[in-house]
Image 1 (cartoon, rainbow, N blue to C red):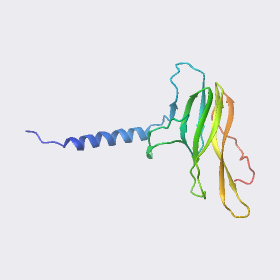
Image 2 (tube, rainbow, N blue to C red):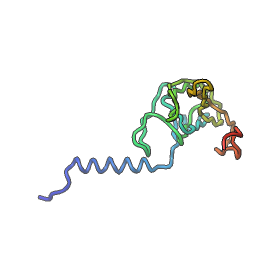
Image 3 (tube, one colour):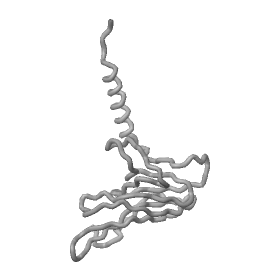
Length: 155
């Protein structure tokens, strides 16, 4: 009788190989609809933002950092045009609190949206808070960014 690796070791090896291959994948575009040629919009996620649910549906992803239950940068979501409810939070080590918040997006067909965060710092207490924001980049957005920072004090 030939001896070999136990079955659980082979299963573990296959799982590890799958995990590494999934983590190395550069395709971070997630199609969140089943319309063949339906009217869709693109939602890009900024760094630090975690999108936990869209219309009550949560992801279960294997990415380069392991298992995740949130879409995050550099994930790109293809969603149907129409109204959507997003549940998200901001992950930043410098934040005093990181509450989950919700906002509504009325997505237009062909448009690209960027979901991000605006950080506020209290002048009196130095406490930090954040607000979620969605920017409509319009149709045919190429994903580029501005050459100069929006706030001149940021360098």
